[in-house]
Image (cartoon, rainbow, N blue to C red; front, top):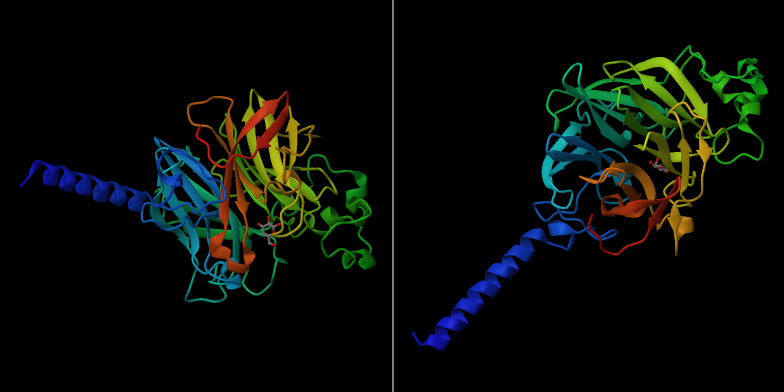
Length: 380
Ligand code: GAL
């Protein structure tokens, strides 16, 4: 074989091998950079299916749990369950399969196929050496009227998780910052007055807290937060989404302790994501406009129990009033960078749920104010 022919052949082999590598990674995302809003292929080249998700850092591995969505509008309901992916570097994700499956053989089950199962989050419980998953649950066929929290546990991080129960928070308990107005008896005429959406009047006057005191408060958009002292909290939109509640969980993280407080009454905070920086607590949140994006919100507090001070929209620049077409789902401490954080948001596509995209961006600070700027491509 002539020398030039050998060089040509080597070049061809190199080109084929290179193309093979690219084919495997599938996009810019796999490798070493985040590409917000693009398709994010997993190790099989399939767009990651973990919407409304959160991350658990366990040992040297990151686990991403999120809603497994399917095609079309039907895909907004839970037809599969909670999907899990693992990664060592946050860029390359391995499909770990379905961590919690919906129940397919009993349509009356709390997590029957077709229920609404949103914003799942998993935390590790040191005491029991197990993993505890919480999610917003709406039983099948009742729209968003249930406002329940679902809880599941597993001894193995990627599952399978066993469903424990569906509950309304803190039945029979008043929040630590309850006011007399909440304890007044709700007139029957008020009970039907409020069906959701924004209110011109302060919702405290409708006494939604009192209405739900006996049966348990409502819980929709949610997150979990584990503090440095291992105490864990459930943070959720309550009182018809009008008011955010923060509840201390029991030591095993599988139930409410009965200690809780309410914040931002009448502000309709959704999509809460809590993190701690230099001893202060922060929240990134959204307004309440369903799948449609709105301007982000942020807040800071010296203690988890407040006082919470609302700050500005953390998003800055073009489309900041739409949070860059995203809604918060989690804030992740940046690996190996104390004091730095990654915003994780969803760009929902309710007309074809499975196509939802992930908007992950770095968070920087100006004083206490978190700032999120758009980047097409970035690395930490
Ligand atoms: C959003 C919420 C999502 C989902 C959606 C349904 O406001 O953040 O998790 O519940 O409404 O319309």
